[in-house]
Image (cartoon, rainbow, N blue to C red):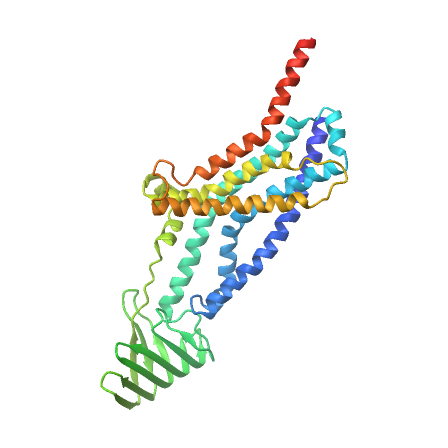
Length: 367
């Protein structure tokens, strides 16, 4: 009977988890696509990298979605069993609350190990690959997202470029218009055709231009100089490709983070380990929160679960920000939110623990 009940409860949780995960992924996929397309429109990501950048961002999104999906799945599975009085049948057959908790713990443990693997290895690898793709595209051309018939800002925000036609494979273009602002000067350049030349990573970006015209407006001296040329070369400074401190931390391997005692490294460790810890504790909290009388509303507990998870997730972000800014003590670190959740889990299960101890004393006394 116990094995049949274990399989039945595991099947209920698994089906609910699969359904909730697919729904959350579809919702999040739209947000990821919108964000990637927004970066393409601003020239931060080349248009041909949309699909790969989208795929490489999915693991990071899953570390946020899977803990919520597991929490809601256990709530839905147990809530249906309580609503249909199946939980009372399982309890009468000897499959009590602690056996039910063991079934949830096995499911949560597998998910925790998966999230640990994702946070320690998969997500950093995906972010590194995404960063390398963007940097490689920036090395081959001055503007990420450069394409025909679009005004695209230059990297660094120093100007804007427009191409009438652009051959990505050959790096050749026609109908170029470049507007660039420098100190007290405004450059306006037109070229009938041209090609981008290959350059080393530490060299400026170089272009070979066909016939065209260049105008320079000297705002300080109120003077305009116009030059017509047959051939010309153009150099643009390579944009700063070094990521910010937060991005650098997210790309570091776990071994270097463990050996680093800095605040940024400890905060990044919390980012990678928090989804696994949160998924385990939230899943173990769900069986108590799912307790309800028969024929109660089906989805009211789900709203509570979503609010609780969002509050926990936002509190984690605040804890890391406070720790990096020195608001919280150094000894407390950014991990106190997990201790708070563990204390909440203990308090939620405390009445059941006391009932179990009381029942054992009664049985021992009657024996």
